[in-house]
Image (cartoon, rainbow, N blue to C red; front, side):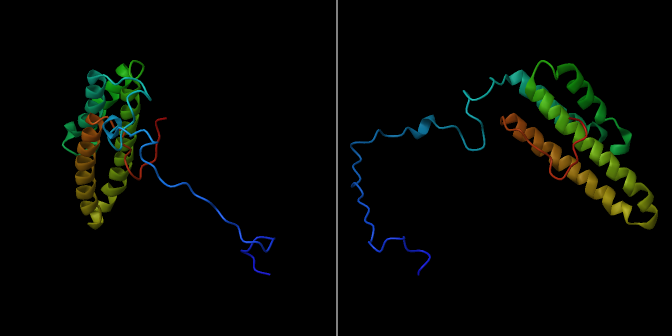
Length: 159
């Protein structure tokens, strides 16, 4: 017996109604949110000041000129997050994300430093500096657009 045939040998018929566009209400595509963003009614209203502080969490990381062991870029992000995390959920999210990214970079800098004596760490330093600059700028741009950016491939220490 064929596995795909129904138990009865009678063929089944399906009747479909013809499409009538006059019966359906037209959909207004202009009311749909842009792709990649949450609809305005679905979540809290985002203030421009809150988004500016959230962007500052990502851009503050660049104050150390992508030389992570200075820890200068870590300080503004940490201060903004500690001061504003309870007043705005976007600052809380983006501050934690930026801090986690910087802690991961610090870990990889500590791994690359002894390897620099073997000349393997020097390309790692360059790669880490470029990655920090590029990803922080991308994160700030996406934050300004109202999206929640997640840094790829990092271990989240700050929950």
